[in-house]
Image: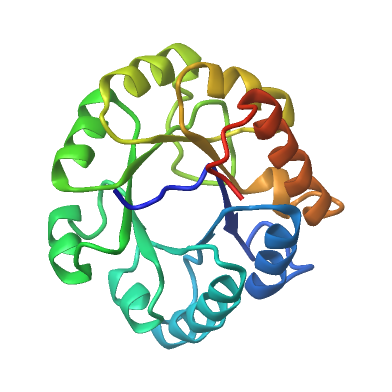
Length: 216
C-alpha cells in the first residue's frame, strides 16, 4: 500500500500573500509536515505546472510526497507523488489508470456513502470534512463533527484524513476517532510563524500517537 502521511499541509496564496507556495512548503517541511498538497484555484495551467515542478523538487529533496489538488495533468507534468480529487473533479478510477499503481490518490468526501465510493474507485485515502466549521472554502459544506468522522473511519479500509477547521486543540480528539491524520490550511498559512505552527501540530500528533513511527 502507498504510504499516506498524517500531517498534510495545503499551500495557499489566496488567504495570505506573505509567502508563495514554495515558501510555505519549505516552512511546513521544516516544521515536520510529512505531506505537502499544492492547492491553487486561480493560476493558469502553465503557471500551475511551473509552481508544481518547483514544489516537487523541494519535496523530493525532503523525502516527502507532493500531492497536487484537483489537477491530474499538472501532477503528471510535475512528476508529483500524487493527486487529490474532489467529488466533481477528474474521476478517481480514470486517474488511477493514468497515474499508475505507484502514485498516491486521495479523494474528498463528506458522507459515508461518498467516502465508500472514493475507496472503491481506487483511492489511497479519503479526505473527510469539514469536520469543524471552516471559511477557507467558499463552497464548504456543513461541519460533520467527530461522530461522523468516527463512523467513517471505522467503516473504511483505507486511511481517513480529517480536514476543516482543525487546529492544535482538536488534534487529540480527531485521532481518537480512528482518523489516520489531519489536513490543514488556515492553522498554518495564517499563523504568525507557519514553521512553528506546523511543529506544534506535529507535536500534537506525536503526543496522541506515541511510538507510531509512521509520520515524519
